[in-house]
Amino acid sequence: MRTSSPSIVCVLLDVFLGSLAVVTICGNLLVLISIIYFKQLHTPTNSLILSLAVADLLVGVVVFPFSMEFSVSSCLYSEHLFCKVRESFDVTLSTASILNLCCISIDRYYAVCHPLTYRTKINVHVVVIMILVSWSFPVLVAIGFIMAGIKHEKCEQMCFIDVLLANILGSIFSFYLPVILMLCIYLRIFLVAQRQVRSIQGATASKMERKATKTLAIVMGLFLMCWSPFFLCISFQLLNDVSVPAAVIESLNWLALSNSMLNPFIYAFFYSWFRSAFRMIISRKIFQGDFSNTKLL
Image (cartoon, rainbow, N blue to C red; front, top):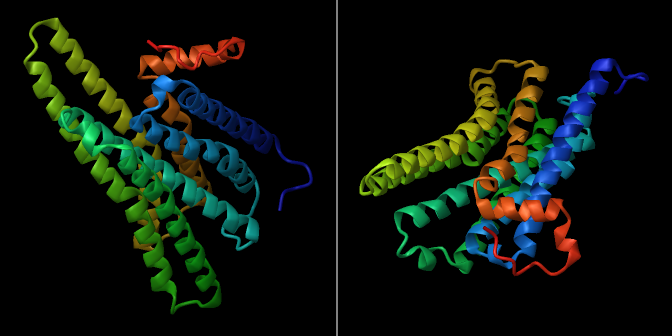
């Protein structure tokens, strides 16, 4: 339970985490409005980015407030309904965000490595299936966590293996497998991009190669920086049967959630047409007339 008079640390923590939530919500709202409003952005690829933005927006709207209450109270490891609801939202939306990132990497793979067949391979139907999988699988994972928790309440030793497997399998399918897939895909994209720029002479090729390297390094680097510490810590705790301090787990969880704040910058700010759309939205120009057919540069 909270104390009657929150400490200065709790107040500062609330302000800091609240600021993260505001930035996350605003950034993903810009992506959502841009893709929905401007017809130029109505593409299968941007549908995946739209799905990612929805997941990240919900992380900012739902998971962040729950996690703020969770972090500054003593409900850690409690079986209270509030904590179970928080965990289910956390698992569902975070996994959905990761899987949407994975789908975007698959889209980029076909765009770069198979440009001639890209439009036939990644069509509207394929994108819809990707989005459905990205959202339905996390719901199943969250249900598995909740069921394991309920079973854990009713027994002490017999269900330990079931709970352990649920947590391990959840980490494998929610993080480790998507990460391995994304690393393989982005490595392949990078190698193909290198071969493509070798045929171009002069400084232009060098500039293109540096940009491709920088983009891929930022995409995977920030993703791994945010998510790896949390899942490695959880895996270490489960496999070695050790107790990790609650403050450490919560700090790593917030680092992981911050990826939802960074995604709009990573996947949108790299593209000039998104930057143009953001400028028009922030300046409220879209409210002064119909600019939905505007050609974004």
